[in-house]
Image 1 (cartoon, helix red, strand yellow):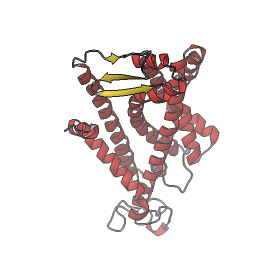
Image 2 (spheres, helix red, strand yellow; image 1 turned 90 degrees about the vertical axis):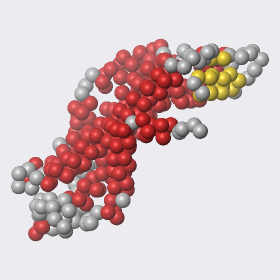
Image 3 (cartoon, one colour; image 1 turned 180 degrees about the vertical axis):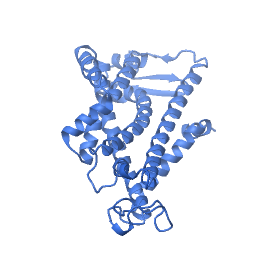
Image 4 (tube, one colour; image 1 turned 60 degrees about the vertical axis):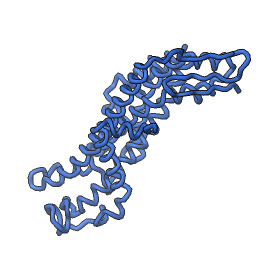
Length: 314
């Protein structure tokens, strides 16, 4: 019985299991925040300000008497929303530009790679995000836009490198000889063979997006109050570092758990991906690409380690 890739990954990677478990727990807490939070995160109670953790307030209260546990749970919703939105936006833009540049080459490739990608990667990402956020102003949508604009270049360079490697393989040349269109080659044959490294990079990019959003919120360039955010909670706790250390401890632990979980998961996926490729290449495969009767048949199959791709001309 063939083991599924997910079971194989979970069986071989201990750190990956921990990263996946913490990631799923954070997602569950964020989704269930309206039901798990004991109070409204924006409700103020000045007589109860700066209370330490107790049975009534498990994580204490902040300087305005707001429940820290409720704000931490709702802050997870903001951080995960920003992370998912930024990864989707930057990943799609980078994947599209990188794939087109790598496939067509020429002047467009030089413009995208030398001018656009190098220009964005030459600046520190967080400084560029701060500049865009300061120009656009605070707000959740502005944070997502600023981080998307500054984060697409890494995905574009990775996608371009993968396309440059795959486009010269025999099954791509066979598809061209059968008259397949550029869009069909890109979507049906290049994209499935280049998507896995981009998805692994997106997992690691989630950690960077959450950390960048927390940094912008800490600097006052993120979400607008009273929307709870882990970075904004740390900013509010600066003046109470010694008399109310719980205000710093719990949001800092939340940021650390989220960033560490996505980094562990991404690193484990990357190691598993490369070890799987090395393991497949260690077996004698014989003839890797069988091009059978190109002029008389309408399909060509590429057989590689048990994976079969069928190409049919339009």
